[in-house]
Image (cartoon, rainbow, N blue to C red):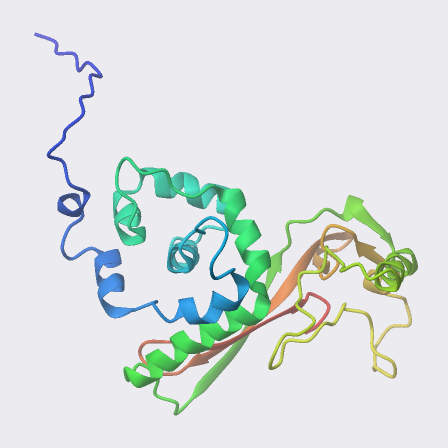
Length: 261
């Protein structure tokens, strides 16, 4: 007799999310090994102390960033769609089966609130903990770089002179530019560099580069990334320093416009 499975779902009051995630699951191990309580001190200056409604827990936010990294997800919208249906990720964030997970637009606002400096400090603290745990040998280092496509269109490019005039008018009237992805107060090696050719820079060609004459208004820090002759997309150059030990811990990361080699 040919069977048929009907889709009938009931509410099970005795169902517990903690029982559904295996004891040896990766996110259980991550929760046991990495205590993220330190992030509260990193971000506390960005919140009012005694007024306003409670925000999304900053620990939850940084856990979401880790999930994006481990699952190779580039879109926050896609991230939250996956978290909705992934039991282990819900458990890691502390959201029960019936709880509504944060909206993806909230993540963008939180990222703007924190700024680049907070993320740098978070990264440095995690690296420091890896060092204390003995995961970093420090005997040899590997340097590497890769190009990453930006979420921006070349159809949105305007003459650089026009864009610089726009920024000058914003600064003149005390308005903060809203389209720059690099923090002007960034620490360490990260600096605000637009990708323009530097004065006195040696080059093998006298032809002006497109990054010298035009800029994308939706992502001013992205510069042309040439993949095939005659074709280019906007992108970034991501540089890594990796420890030579068995754990291959990333010790430093630097993102520059794609024109910076």
